[in-house]
Image 1: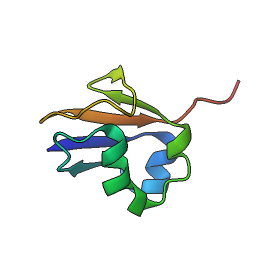
Image 2 (image 1 turned 90 degrees about the vertical axis):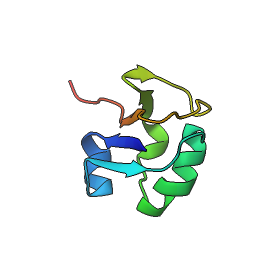
Image 3 (image 1 turned 45 degrees about the horizontal axis):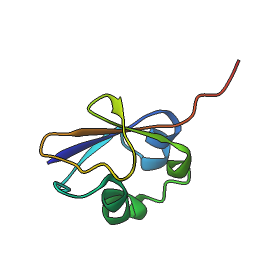
Length: 77
């Protein structure tokens, strides 16, 4: 299983802080298309993606036990 974490505004949009998905062998982009489109997350396109606490591209392939975090851009002063 893959654990998906949502932070800040994405957490509010998703209505949850995390979820588990069966996305082993999928890319981050494929996982988003299969599982996250249903959640209607307008801020997801602007978010940075991290796998196991390191930034990763959408083409990164997910492995068992990975933790994927979506981090919206920081704003404010």
